[in-house]
Amino acid sequence: MHGRVKLKSTAQQEEEKRKEREKKLKVYVATRDACFNKRKDGAMDDDALQLTQQLLSANPDFATLWNYRREILMHLETVKEEDDVQKQYDAELVFLEGCLRVNPKSYGCWYHRDWVCGRQPRPNWARELSLCDECLALDDRNFHCWDYRRIVVKASGVPVEQELQFTDRLIGSNFSNYSSWHYRSTLLPLLHPQSPEPPANCPHPPNNSPPNSPHTHSHRVCEEQLLKEYELVQNAFFTDPNDQSAWFYYRWLLGRAEREEMISCVYMSREGERVVVAFSRPVNAQTGGLMLVLDGQMQRVEWRSAPPSMRHTPVWICELPPGTISDINNEHNLTVHWTEKHTHRECALYTGRAESWCRDSATDQELFRSELSVGKTSVLQSELTSCNQLMELEPENKWCLLTIILLMRALDPLGHERETQVHFQKLKEVDSMRTSYYSDLCSKFMIENTILKMEYAEVRVFSISEKNLTTLCHLDQLLLVTHMNLCSNQLSRIPPQFSMLQCLEVLEVEDNLIESLEGLSNLPKLEELSLKNNKISKISQLKPLASCSKLSRLDLRGNPVTKMDNLQAELAELLPSVADLMI
Image (cartoon, rainbow, N blue to C red):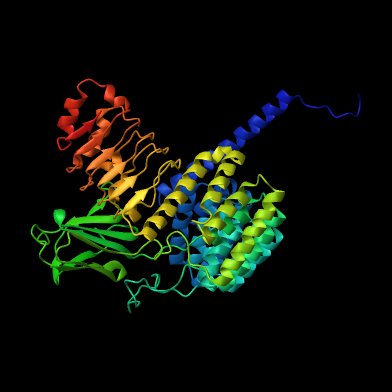
């Protein structure tokens, strides 16, 4: 046994480690307390700076110490010459590099580095860009570094084209680099923007448009570059069909740009002397400078949101003073001014008409799909063919299946409707954990198709029954609908946004799973409601209907609530306007 090293037992090793940890902890706590005492005493000297450095070198995520360190550095700025301040901050950046080696994803480190460069008399942005390159070479998904890189690029004026080439290099070396694909999506609209077209109700951009207004740049990518991107991303997902990064980027390419902020619809009714204004995006009309001019006279009105619980919503309602537009023998001209966005919308209410509206259709707004040129149609059709070929090789690839659906919708959503539903069913089979997501997405697409069909037919009836709908969306596009049929679906609730349907008169939602009727409040024209065969079990669930003053017909057959004693009497008290009650 001579000459052999004696191995310590596990118990001995653990005990030694425990003692070592305790020793380090005592030193750390003592240093921390000393540091806190110095701050309490208002010390702003090099000793305090050294103490914080000692602690942060071991634990870079101590936010209070970074704050104290910044206080000290700002004080030293006032007592040192500019060259000494420069040297101080240069040393600080070297110290920060050491901290980043301890934790490359430390929020405190990256924030402090940004702060230091902002305070430096002569920041070296080239060095900072080089540091980002090094960090991303070690971990190309370090989102802290990606955020910091964007700050550096903006501050140093790095050309957008140079940054796009940077993403080329990273994607070329690793198709799975999701951060690079995302960064690329922010650069392309800047370098290759599509020429913006002003909204129809604002034909000429105002002279005083703010720098970031929709009139000054486009969020869309020009078609020529878009077609090149299709080819790039196709190479990526054919190389590794199961990697999600390229598929997500492809989905962004197929998507539509953010909608311009505009007034999409103005509706006015003599009944109740109401004006309803719909916007292309949720807004706060109470703070956004929304004004009404009727027959040349400014109107003082109070705006309320639909639904009332939301401060930002696409639909806003107001009542004009009594007697303003109630006389059917008078003609009126209304102008809605949205001063925040320098735009307006006009609507005329003619003699003999009880209501009037002026709106952009979903097709006009390119809400669900963009108009395609011959060239882009050809490319997308080719992409669809390629994806179908890949599907034959990878029959259970969910990303490929979903992309095929999106391509079909970009090309012809109505023509591919049946195929789309078949693919959604397949998706639920191969990716069962996301069945609810696919059901909701399929519901969304079915609703979009039904809106398009309704607009083509120029009717105000919305019917989508026996389609297994699980959710309701785009309700702001249904503002003018008077009759709605949602029977035999899988809906569990009427969402609050349903109160946007200010013209709705008849609603059929038989044979669903509905338990909540929250969205049926404040529907001024609702007369008939069929809730047959749902899951209404309590009187309290019907309370939203109390605000529907014109409701005269209600069908509750097949709901658990019908088994309650004295139901008819309680409903008569809750809903006195209902003359035809079926229970």
